[in-house]
Length: 383
View 1: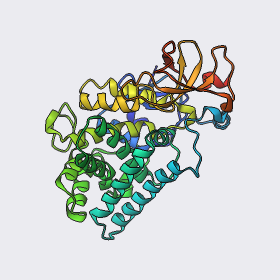
View 2: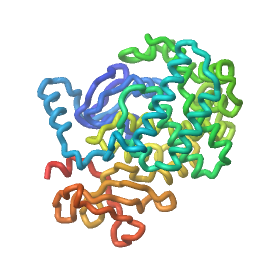
View 3: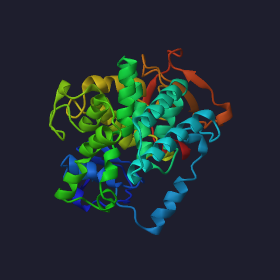
């Protein structure tokens, strides 16, 4: 395993193998560009080095290999998105509406909290109709552009599902969704020289990044005239369960439950947002990382609820069953996350199935079959 100093990392770097921080925590999958947000997280958590079994991909030959990966059979894609489908249009519409709101805030146009509330109502209504589709789109990284709005909508979707699993009152869930939509809006008040900087941040620049919850709080209270519950999420979503977060070093139950939920959702979204179909293990690795937290950053009860709605093997995961067949997870049972609904990709004899011939299996009903381990699509497509 090779160690790389955090100071040596650069935005856009590709690695031939996954890169890990703090032992087994996945930072970036193989052949996925490193983002400024990834480097900022390392600096925030004061992680001085990362590890990988691979190397930096830079040569023309390596670029050609990336193009070959893009030609993997579509049957192994994370989601079978039809751009004209109603769920997909609903998901894109939420992102576009929030992006318009963010653009208004950035340009100084008066924006009312009612505009946020309208998006909250629409999101919860659409989520009731298309929960699996929305999770699939998040894990599949289907929408490009509007990165802040997309990240915020994704965080809000995961937060809503987690809050519902915790059986919080509907009014509280509405406030949590609003807080999730706005949790990073303070980043709009930071200079592009910092938010778009290539390479590592200085201590002074890192302190400015860490000030964004305060900027968000000011936007919520002074510009949007939002409620105190939303403001608490704005202020506290970077607090940690062990008290080592910021800005106020709150710990445990002193942190608002909404902020605790958004913290988990935001961390998961950050880990999976950069993935493409050829990296379908990222959802599984992200859940694994959160489960390994052991009460350091996150409320253990929130992690349990989150795992029930996302699953140990999230939607889109490609998994080998106990009979050696390979399947894609298409739906999760919250009361039995290890018994999802799956679609066959390869039979037990190693025959790759045509998508139109592949059957769907509910593992709650097929008691003789069970999930064995997550697999990388490359293990299948080479057959």
